[in-house]
Structures are given as structure tokens and as C-alpha cells.
Image (cartoon, rainbow, N blue to C red; front, side, top):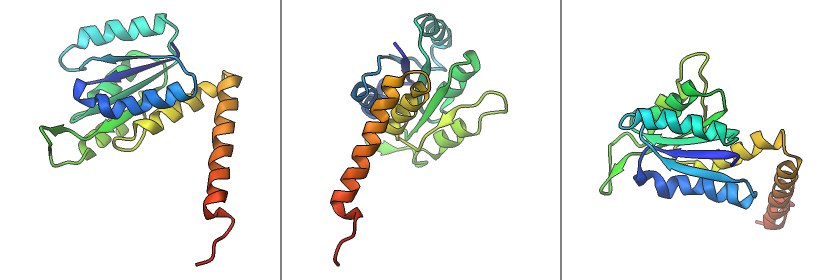
Amino acid sequence: MKVAIFLGSKSDMDTMKKAADVLRDFGIDYKAYVISAHRAGDLLVKTIKKVEEDGCEVIIAGAGLSAALPGVIASRTVLPVVGVPLECINPGKSNGLAGMDALLSIVMMPPQIPVATVGIGNAKNAGYLAAQILAIKYPEIKAKLVEFRAKMTADAESNGGDGIEL
């Protein structure tokens, strides 16, 4: 396992699955956990130690509301942590903050305990960032990223990037 994905709640699964999809596309091993920083702090600390022992190299953590999960994880490890701020929606209704509460909670970490932060709900970018971090060490992941970017460029060219008539 190269990446551990943490979710604060099962209700975050649909969004955080997008990070797992990206990792899977790049052939990166991962394992996911549902652990609340507030409701199961001891279990979280135990699991962080376990993923470190298992060779994890990057952690992705998604959380809404106070979004403490990414910061708590970052405070307990020196591994890079990528935070995904999530909008809190309970039975189809937003808490009214549209994820801004989570974004600010994650991005405004105190000095010395950084959390890389992607856009609200953008778990896909967390997966891509984890792949880029791993590409520093793993040439095969770097090659897949280079190929992926080349395909994006080719797609852009074929979709009008070389010019179109309006």
C-alpha cells in the first residue's frame, strides 16, 4: 500500500471514491478507512501508526464541517497529507456553508503542520497529487503521469485546440 485514504464518515464515500479511482487508474495500491477524528481518536492514531508500518507514503484525508481529520492526521505523522474539504449534506440538505467551513479548517493549518489542500469535493485532484508525489520516487508512476498528460494535450488539440472556425 502506497496511499491510505481516510474518510471522516461513511457519507463521504461517494466523493472520496474518486481519489481511489484515480489511484487505481495509475496502478497505485491504496487502502481506505472510515474513522472520525472526533469520535474515534485513539483508533485513528493506532491506524496511522499501522499504515506507516505497512509502508504507506502518502495519506489522503477527506472531511467536512470542522474538517479536523486531515490536520489531526498531519499532526501524528510526517508523511505528506492531502486534505479534501467536503460539503456537509445531511438528508439532501447542505449545512449552508457549501464546504467553505471545511476548506478553511484544512487550508489554515498552523505553521509546521502543513496539509496540502485541494478544492472542495475535489477528491480526484487529491488522487492526482498523491500520484505526483509518488512519481518523485517511482519512475513507472512518473511515466504514467507523462503519458496521461500527453493524452490530455492530444485530446485538447483534437477538440479545437489547434483552432476552430466560429
